[in-house]
Image (cartoon, rainbow, N blue to C red; front, side):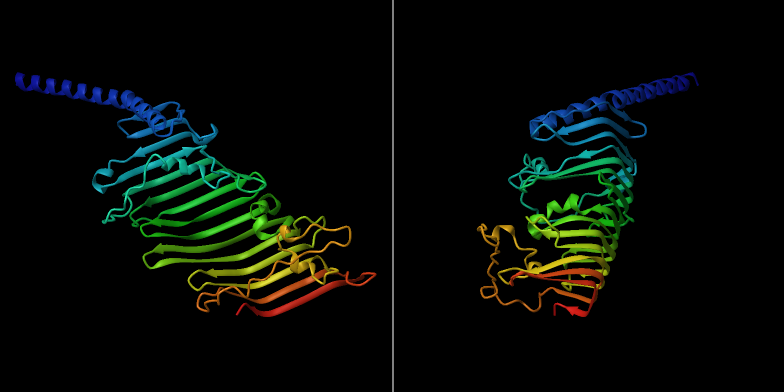
Length: 413
């Protein structure tokens, strides 16, 4: 009996020593290894100094916490950072044959994607130390990962495009994202909710489901209070005209999938509306049109059918300034012409050179791939149309008020 008791005591002491050693290694050693390896990796692969605050690990709950991490860009500015990160690994990883997380929570993350003047994205630097390896013949799909709950709060994304003549920059903050019951296996719901706000007051709400094997996503979205002048500069040169005012909002749903059979994309905008829209040709000092409200109802797009349809287009109120110049050209047809196509004006009346059409040299279109757009109901109500003919002296000016027009059955077919 005494021997048994001694053995139990020895076993208890040994167990206590093992637990103490395990706890010491977990609480003290793991954080130091994580910190040292992270800093060394950043220095060795990118020659950049990673800043990292306190690191904590609980070996009994398998919870890792990291504070105040910041990774610099090549120019020294932050590329990505966060204030807090909590990762809770579950024991179910053992029998699930994949990393299983009870929770991943990131607080105040910051990312700064920048398209450099040469067209390269700064985040592409992260892949440079790892040359692309030839693909293996056997594709087992993405690694098995399970996340019961992912949460991002108070995020901040700063985007810049320096390839434009006038560099474009915008901020989204605060950003919040919640992902529930996610896995890369396709056997879970993978539901997500994304919320974002821009500094101008614009808001984004995006929710649905997403899967990686196969790659697919479907859900709903809503954008509101987007200031057109703030973001139009990003597409201004390609569009060919200026937007001087306008507040935009739209909402709808989408269905996307990509696989061996090809890519499918369908989305529907229940309503897209622009209030107080002002447009003019680039370089001019007055608006060609000022529209009180422009609304599209039930706009649908189907990639597989290469077709789009809008149930109703309605312009309500506003002013349109139309004139025929001394060269016989109508200003409305020149709205989207690049400014570069206009020659330097002489002392006389300004003229605009219309770029030659490429119809004669363009290959015959493939009727099976032509994009089809239909709009069965287009209507303008209560417009004030100012018309001027500058081909005669003195110019003839007319005002049509109110001006109403309706077009039925429009189709590019």
